[in-house]
Image (tube, rainbow, N blue to C red; front, side, top):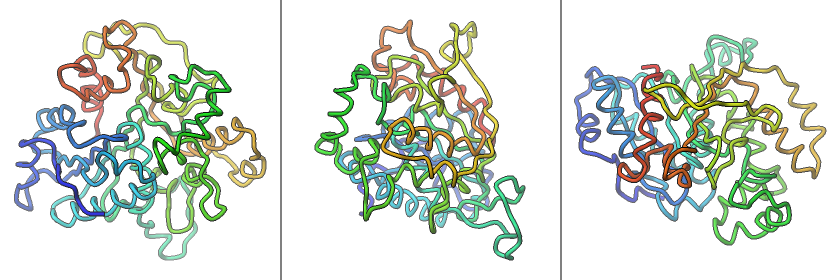
Length: 350
């Protein structure tokens, strides 16, 4: 489906994107919104990137999956995003590097898109042995892959105990939600709750923790210099801490209030190293047990390293809107999340 308008979400970015080829900015930053969202959702974040990384990056707020189009399914949205990125790259021959910053479901859409955009490393094209640990890991449509950043994204889906906090962790309500979610969020709801079985295939999110046919999901993630998951430790009523931080129940850390004046809402940080997992053995044990399926997604995503940044707005007057505050969706109402955006930019590899 075609571009619905919106495009870049501010005049500053538009001006940067109009810069002639050969300018200093050779790093494309693609910002992806969440469900029923729009380019305006990243307005504050995009402005901060433009201000703090001036002449170093070109920011593009994705516009192909706005509003009701976000209900069409993660795969359909991912294909649209991939095509949009190709068009943006083709406009600017000076671009050499690419990064993604995505909120909520946008993180899953971006993961799908990079699986489509991934290009094999040279040794693979020459039929030489390769692995995820190889230095030459391929690229994203000919560009060097640098930062892949998700903000409150449900990497393990929304099915399972307390993965969607507003369901109160009540098993009966969570089971009902699995059965009716597609009436509200249509195909995207099925993907999030792992109830899709297109042509008898496993759920899409299960397929997205490995390379699947011509979609190289895990290889694409591996090709980025860094992968970062920002998560709300509480008061996010849409996406739970476990699914957004790619952790099991026993892996959730104990955190304390931040003493930082620069990042007052960053309460915990860690680097999770890549784990070597026999994916075939994992697939063999998958049954109808929801927890087992969640474990499969978790183990698949652990095959690559992740920087994990935990955020808390528990002392904020707008803590009940944590899912939007962490993104600064509204610069006035959600301004307390500005330190999270600053943290993203301060640690961004240009």
